Length: 429
Image (cartoon, rainbow, N blue to C red; front, top):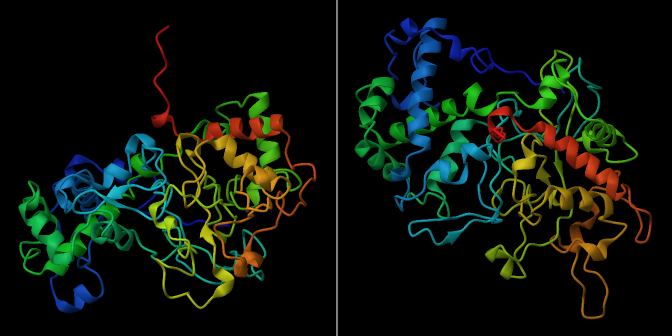
């Protein structure tokens, strides 16, 4: 599918603005009730002024992103769960992170990466390909949104979630965040970008913080460098090993891994690098993870699109168990996988895809009578929602879709998707 970035978000553009441009007067935001209702935006600006303002917002958002004083505990920053050294994902292997005022509240889902979200489309229940990328008559179903359940479309809205979540940064409301920003060492920078009256209205302050964080998270060098060896390979500037090439072939083969049916691996028609996601939603049947405290309640189920964190689609029973397809860029750095963090190695993830249905006893617990509790994290009423496309859909006892060597080859290929800035420094030996 075609992914379109605005001129302001394209890699390298903002970085190319000269120092002289930064000396331009920053347009303060108009603090009116109408502006607040529509989201805070500046008045008309020239292209140069827009670039300069983006630079200021990026610098301000970076300070906020690493500032633990914005949390109720004073111990948790955005970077605590979205570690730059781990592609802005968690550094730990825990399935969920701890947060809250006393850092003792467990989350409900695994923390996703913040890299390569710049082209995620707005959520829609009916996604059609653009005319130059596919059959635009085909309804691809629910697609888009920035969270596991697609409940927000914009970076500023996504940034507000952890700030106010009781099991994340734990602030009570916008006024709570505004009070912390008013005391921050960079409060003068907030005024410089958003105007002297930005602290007069707590909602304006909160919206300003969200905009700054969202702008930082559009920084090309930080969040979408496209610097992996696979990117260099696509550009004709690097080679892949025989194993990696075979892994790529298996990744794209619809009769084998079939991974690229959702994790798009080819450049778009306009040459834009692949994001390794179609941003659609699938129910994959990951085993129930009892390491998540919420799952200690047998009546609790995380059903993705139909709740409980998303509430507007609760009546859509055909959406229950569906979660958004994440990017596979930098996937080799992850320490927990799927929305519930059940798996901890990439090889186990690929093996699960290959044998979920042919060898369910390998992944799911047994009942007292020895039968297998297949798909044990999804109530049986929603079992028809499970994805059955290859490599799924086999019968117990069938040959797996992939052999062990083939699984190793796919894992090797996935290792080529790690960005250059995240690779270990070469040894001097």
